[in-house]
Amino acid sequence: MAAAHHEPLAEPAQEILRRLGVPPAAYANGELRTISPIDGGQIGRVRIDGPADAARKIEAAHAAFQVWRSVPAPRRGELVRLFGEELRAAKADLGRLVSIEVGKIPSEGLGEVQEMIDICDFAVGLSRQLYGLTIATERPGHRMMETWHPLGVVGVISAFNFPVAVWSWNAALALVCGNTVVWKPSEKASLTALATQAILARAVTRFGSDAPEGLAEVIVGDRAVGEVLVDHPQVPLVSATGSTRMGRDVGPRLARRFARAILELGGNNGAIVCPSADQDMTVRAVAFAAMGTAGQRCTTLRRLFVHESVYNQFVPRLKAAFGSVAVGDPLATTALVGPLIDAGAYEAMQQALAAARLAGGSVAGGERVDLGRPDAYYVRPALVEMPEQAGPVLEETFAPILYVMPYTDFEDAVRKHNAVAAGLSSSVFTRDLGEAERFLASEGSDCGIANVNIGTSGAEIGGAFGGEKETGGGRESGSDAWKAYMRRATNTINYSRALPLAQGVSFDI
Ligand code: NAD
Image (cartoon, rainbow, N blue to C red):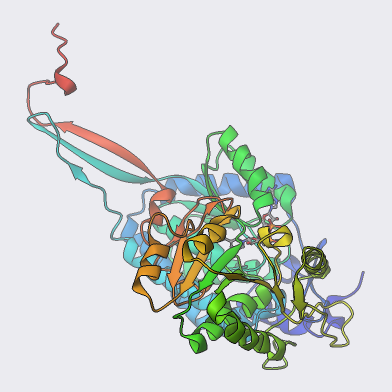
């Protein structure tokens, strides 16, 4: 068994964990090897939870719910406010750990923590705004209203590419809504989960004794332990983020026991570049959307439709950006593109590029960038000019590949844009108001996110986040997404002494 501290990134990772108060037993000698994609070296050995451990934690969260649901919502908001404070204090550490564990460049690692802080602020305000309606009734002497109640234990399953932000979108809302939370992080990102849990524990300590034990639990492991969460009768809602393949399994399992699902699955996001688009800005927007996070965002731009009249001007500029972007160690250099998560991601990318060539595509980039690290997978982002939308273009490959296709007619481009199975994010680049509005109209983009003159990725927390079709239909984060984390009761109160029945029904005894 190799000692973790022989690896260069193990020491900085474990130092952060120590500083945040994570007990070494959780990450030093466990069964699950945690690898940094930056150099392919081991950074921890995490103790995994078996099915019995997972069930015990879910039951603890269920017991905690019996207490937490009665704590007034603004007081629950106070816990989330304290958590936001602790995140601010730990931002540099947690952001760096995100970079070490999943390979994000520093500003994206820090940005992920900022997103956690932002959703805490949002949730604190929300804790005084869990509004129900008062509704006109047809009966005299009656009042009708709706009340929102806590739901129970909220299960959160998260993906490797947003290892902590996605949990926080769910947890901040779930906690102010009066729920308790059990989190199954990605098996590729357990250390950041343990660190986040320790930061939350600081807030809980400061909050005081009305925060019950078991308020927020983490279960570490792979899909087997995730399945325990999905199947447990004491978990009324599971919010699951990951591949469509995962959602196809999790969705029906939850439906079978009538539990609720928030599914945040794969994307195959597209954009349209119209003749009037501001080309300077569009090149920058497309570059970030397609190459940021090394193409490993659910909202990464993967398909680009460029009007034939600007194609020969625009595409060479974009190609130049793809050819010159700095690829490298995100911690030791100022590279904008870090590593792929692992060998599997690299192989999937090469397979997609081979399929694209077979389908008539012309590939620029995509080759491995040699940093002398055999176990790390750095690639030059690929720009693939395709004669039509076919083969690998129709599927999400979780790597930096942008398929570019010319178009002639705007309506036809929108039709092709919508002709894939996923429905997460989309953009149009135009100065033409008619095109912009058509893209946003009901017959335009069919995605959960539709933008004008900004890229497909990099959403703010204030809006509801999620997508349609095979992206799963769930919504998280801002707007009224909180309603999915509560149960609604309709209440009718008779303050008269008569008993009029609805719809004029008479039943005189
Ligand atoms: P993944 O599907 O391999 O794993 C995601 C999580 O699901 C992990 O924690 C995994 O252990 C768990 N899991 C897998 N199968 C399961 C099962 N049958 N039962 C219970 N748990 C199970 O995804 P990944 O490779 O970590 O992440 C990349 C994928 O996630 C991409 O498809 C990306 O588009 C998607 N994603 C979507 C969003 C969104 O909001 N729509 C956000 C981030 C990532």
